[in-house]
View 1 (cartoon, rainbow, N blue to C red):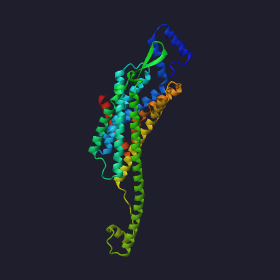
View 2: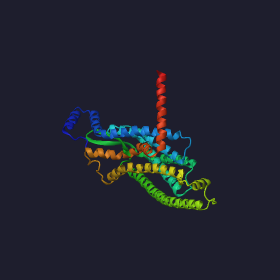
View 3: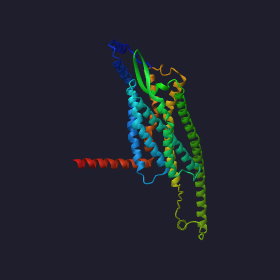
View 4: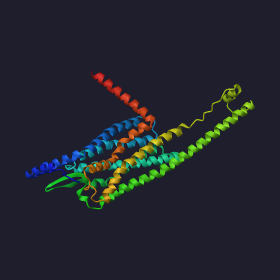
Length: 385
């Protein structure tokens, strides 16, 4: 990547070199690079604000529910993990973009990368559990996860995320950046200098890539089976409705021709004898409708997870295949690259938006919660005055 690109910048650097002020040179280069990243920084600030507010709202709504289904615990766990990322992971990335050459905090970098890695793997594990829960609930009736099992799976997912993220503590830290000026070196929160050039970063990234693709394969197989089962049931349901209407029609005809018949209910008999039209309404099971809506919401969450990671994976593959990929980027290309590298943070902010659009019950509960909160704040203000 280019450090200095214009003649005016070169003149400033030359003047600083003449007075041997290496710290001033480093700060100047850092601020110059940070200005280039302003669009990405603004984007991450937006995600952090939206994600923090939205996930707090989701946590409050589902935590306060008197009755919690298995899906409620999955959604609550995802919201907590997303909230941790929005409060810790995203601000750290913003700090790293603001100080791309002066991140001299290797311990902080290790801790924050560990937390971020843990939340990603934990979320992936929860979404796998969600896919199996939907599969059992729809394709294997009677075998769906109980509330107790859902709680256990959520806890296991978080523990699994923590246990599988420990290599990040060893791999990440301070990366020394050569700025092309003698005696001036920057520092970034990235792969630690101690492991650069070894096989360990490749093994770790390979593990993450394989985990992602295995997760996507699970999603593809299970949700394809779920979709086929829903389609099959819809066809059967239409056939059943047609058959039921024919049976009712025949029964009413028989009742009219034979007043002594007791096959139909007394209400239908009375209506038939008085010549009133009979409306027969075939009720759809409420449970089926509710499960279908929940499945749609959770499928949308899973799809958003996959799509938010795709730009990141694409540029990571390009960087692995093309050794000088980053060095060959101009300013615009570098900004686009940074957007792609941070794309997976979209997943942490978008889930509450998905719930708002696809879940009427969540919208209702969220509105009630916000009204109560606003009323409580208004009462507190009035009491203070």
